[in-house]
Length: 107
Image 1 (cartoon, one colour):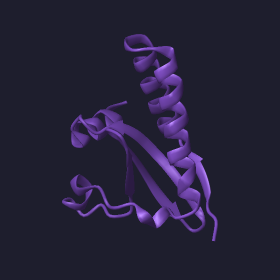
Image 2 (image 1 turned 60 degrees about the vertical axis):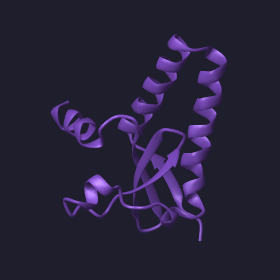
Image 3 (image 1 turned 135 degrees about the vertical axis):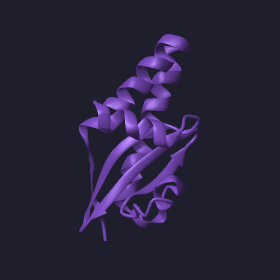
């Protein structure tokens, strides 16, 4: 069974922010490669979305409807609804997930 994958506006903004940061602080070439790899990782969820795991920070507070997969230090957090996958955020795994999610709620 194949799933449709959708990126929320927040996830698109996350990827754009990551791209901009790498482009400005490293190189355009590395930013382009990273963008492509993040995109591919998200789109691979169409084949086997249940391969992810519940983020431990969310599991501790009984929020179990979200899963995550990793690419390098980045955490891709998503939700499966019927035959659709919604990518909600792409976050730097070196940062505190709880802090990042709280910042989201404030926006």
